[in-house]
Image (cartoon, rainbow, N blue to C red):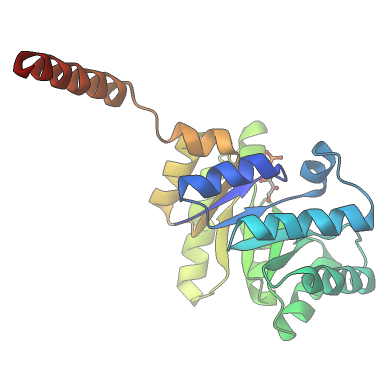
Length: 221
Ligand code: E4P
């Protein structure tokens, strides 16, 4: 399973990259705004900086919502760097834009997916990635993981190659459960990725090993 980080924060992207587990990055307009990035030039510069940190795919989301504008925006975004994937919302013109980008060999990430039907449409349009938002479904008392399971079943039934990119991941168990269900990719905040490391028995065990080693070394000296 691939690990993407869901942030536009360069320090966090660097930290995940330096851990050696980063396969790519996803951003969205809210995450870019959180970093104070606005205006065409700054946005373009920021995407290029992200691409310099990771060797993987970097999702850059379009702001427009009409077919013509999404196509123009996406074509500008992909010219920034070969790692850019155009992130397109799951709306009627978005599906049409994904079909267009696919026909041009441009990678896409279909975002804001909350149902199996939407994921089916994204695959039929040829999306490279589909992003089901599991945390936001959990927030409204709907099991986000069931959606991952349903999409996996549908895609396997027909051999769709669209990769399931589990998004809106909030905690380490989301990541583990997505791995069990066969998601191709998760995109998560750094906190959820780092939390995978943690187990009290690891910390206690390491402290004991180091203490025993120190005692044994004292005896020899
Ligand atoms: C997906 O690509 C989105 O950027 C993201 O996962 C949304 O997560 P949130 O629900 O935590 O905002």
